[in-house]
Length: 477
Image (cartoon, rainbow, N blue to C red; front, side, top):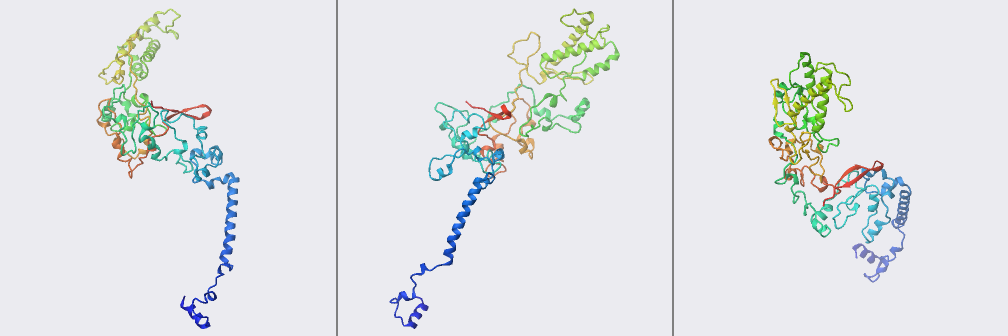
């Protein structure tokens, strides 16, 4: 008992403690009305009613559904932001998961497949994961496709053989858990790999060119390389429209300025007035086409030159070119014979593996200077060579994605460090795994998760019906 309470007992003579305990301790205290208890009831009732009203309003009004979202939908699904039923075709699944029932999602694979047409990821897989297992919506505008946890990938790729149908095999590496731990070396950079392109080309010879000396010999280079002292990587390699990969090298855009397929009129012309015309004739190179096309174009040009400039001494008619249904005249025969001899002489220069420089620095760059003849091709009746397809890869890594624009702060030789010294065509000048790991590592300058370089659905986009993209997967046997 407190001292104040003991004093009160003593003053009233109520006896000793605790004989008269009920007189000073109010046992019915819980029956007395209290302001906090009364207001708490009404406050709880008001909050409950208000919450129910808010839920009803947000459910009945489609424009307020976003209140229940964890985050905005991705940019790809922005058009369905007010049409939840377009994707959520299963009802009460959150309540089912809360009560411990089967782990099912509110979005089925059929709902995803109604728009995203395409085959499964891998036909040899023992089981196919659901779309929403990796692609979690309502995580942000750019989260759906680019932010997939590594555990979703390593669930199978940590032991790939275990997740394949029995008697099925895969060409992919069996165990991959982390890019910086056990990722295999890139296939093109593996030991013993060579570039199988059928083309004679060396990077060192082009990067070490003395353009100043070449411009003195070939004035036409002034237009394209007027100020540069040496060739740079960007002079030939430009990124595509999406700024991801390098656009294919084209002869007309990247090679023709230096390697012109020059065609000239051989032999002496009787009329000195024709020499300026012959010089003008030489400025138009042969087309970069098949040998049969080159022969046809050259023959047409030489016949036209002979007829236009009266090389045979007889006035030519407008329709003097030989045609199958008309007997050739003397004009036709002489012009045709002269054109044929010129074509044969120029073919001997174009389709040979040697360079011919005349005193006036006129250069004949022939086809075999870059292209290789097909060794297994049978001899042609027309006597023309058969060149092997160049087979230059459009993409070296078909199962990964890359974006040069994201690496624009780096110099080309920081990744392609062997280009300046490469003197053989079989050299593969791509960066190695170790070089990429210097930046792409945990805590490094760049991300190293799986989806940074790989897509779960290895695919190429093709224009399908109704202006929609149809996915054609690149299946690996």
